[in-house]
Length: 159
Image 1 (cartoon, rainbow, N blue to C red):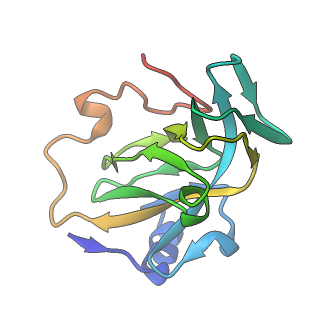
Image 2: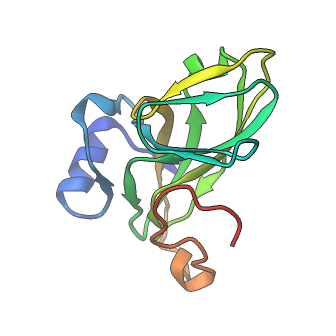
């Protein structure tokens, strides 16, 4: 496994072996890409916020969907990491791997662990995706194994 640099990411995007739409050059980091917020769902109030400011009550679960639609190539997986600015506000999030062959926006399960309401601007950079080059192409890509969330758009809860 090799982590891809900003240069690697740009090369793979130009070769259509990796996709990030929309792509914003300013979101590129030395070893990843900052994904921005496209939608916030707050279960407590049953609100889907797609513009403006999402207000997250204290001690509340919520979900964030990325604005970006990612297309993982057959030899690329990735990890998600919360931006430290959100961690410092008390946001906890459940992150995992994004499988080779996955296409779609990403839904992230979050919790406001602070004792105060937190405002989250739609469009703000929320997490970093770190791409990894697999040494071999998997026997079966994401869409061939389960594909449950393939091509999802916006906050997608359990299917």
